[in-house]
Image (cartoon, rainbow, N blue to C red; front, top):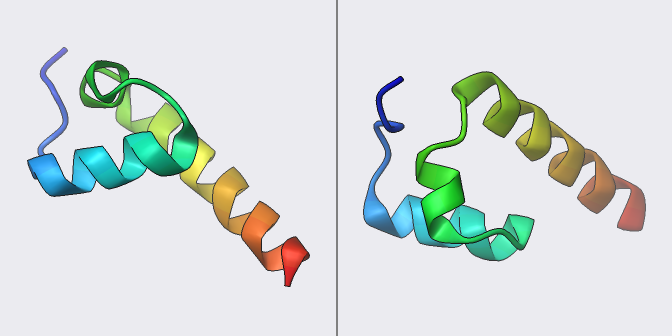
Length: 48
């Protein structure tokens, strides 16, 4: 499996918002990352 094709800035932002190490973001399977982003978006939507 190859690393995600995202910029370093994007990886840092994702790591900060998901509270996981940046190395884990870079090696996370894309479908899992998308699921976590969906959960994060839903959480933010419910907080408003």
